[in-house]
Image 1 (spheres, rainbow, N blue to C red):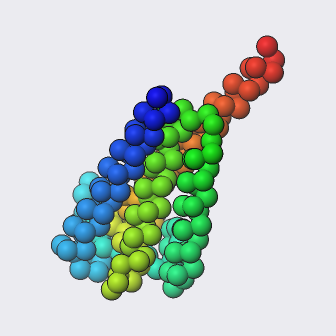
Image 2 (image 1 turned 180 degrees about the vertical axis):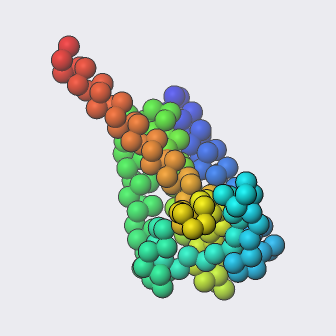
Length: 166
């Protein structure tokens, strides 16, 4: 019963994050032209429409199909890992749900006809000093989920060391 509850929790997180990603991208595509922008906080936060035809942080532009295949493989591996993991705590389930939602959100973008790449629209930084590569909610979910997984693995490693030393 506890495992079922954690799976439902993960499904709710996955669905919520995916809906937020899809809705935000649809809003940006509908209301912004390519490279239109709106600045907040003196330009530190910028909303702008950019199509990423490459991978993370815009690397390898023009390899949309290669990253689509890689995304499917990674998503499959993540789902298999989730299914076969025996020690599913709540943080693990949430982390995996966030990563999966981000992967699915970006896969959807790569599959949509007429869309040249993944819709990125959040830009943070200071012009002339440093501006982080433009990203989206799916990317944020992947990064936050990955950080959460690091915490899960750290806690598990710590638990194993304590058991060994006890």
